[in-house]
Image 1 (cartoon, helix red, strand yellow):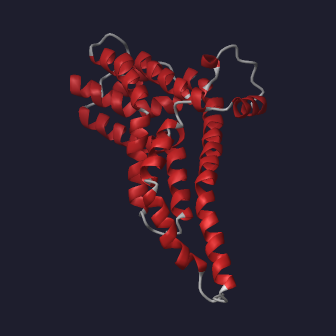
Image 2 (cartoon, one colour; image 1 turned 135 degrees about the vertical axis):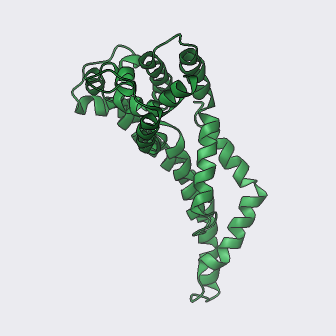
Image 3 (tube, one colour; image 1 turned 90 degrees about the vertical axis):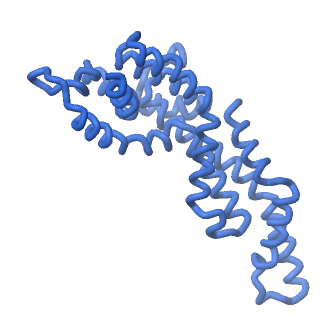
Length: 253
C-alpha cells in the first residue's frame, strides 16, 4: 500500500502542478486523488499495473516542468553562451552542459525540495494529509521560489494582458500568470549574465584581430589564434568555479 501511494504521489505531482498552473482548470477537476485511484463510474480501485501505466504517461509532463518552473533555464542558457564565447562548438558537449545544468539546478532547488518533502511528501506517507492537500503544499513551495525570481515588471505585463485584478499579496498570483512571467524573467537574467561573460572574450578577439590586421595576415582566421588565449584566461581565473558559483549565487537575491 505504501509503495502504491508513493507511486501515485510521485507520478501525479507533474500533472497536478500543470493543473494548478490554471486555477480554472484546477477548479473543474475536483477529487483528483480519487480520479487517479478509481475507475470512473464503478468506484473500483485501479490495478497496480494500470496505475504504473498512467504514471509513466504523466512523466511526459516532467521535462516541461523542469524547464519552466526551476532554475534550469537560466543555467543552461548561460553555459551555452559561455561555450559560444570561448569559440568552442561542441566542447563541452551538449550532454555535459545538460548534466551540469540539471545537477546545479538540483543544488539550487534543494531548499524548495526539502520544504516539499517536509510539508507534503512525508505527511502524505504518514496519511496525515490527502493527495490534493499534499499537491497544494508542493505548489506553494514552488510558487514562493518562482515569485522571488520574477521581476515585477514582467508580472505586471502578463497580469495586464490577462486583465487580472490587482493582487493584494504574492500568494494570490495564479500560476497561469506567474509561469510566463517567471520564464521571461529567467531569459532576461540569463542573457544579462551571458553578456557580462562574453565581454572579456570579445576583447581578446578584437586584440587578436587588430594584431593580425597590422601584420598583414588577413587570410588567417582570428578565432584560431584567439582560442588558446581565451582558454588560458578561462583556466587562470578558474572560470568554471566562478561561473557555477555565480550562477548558484544569482538565485539568492
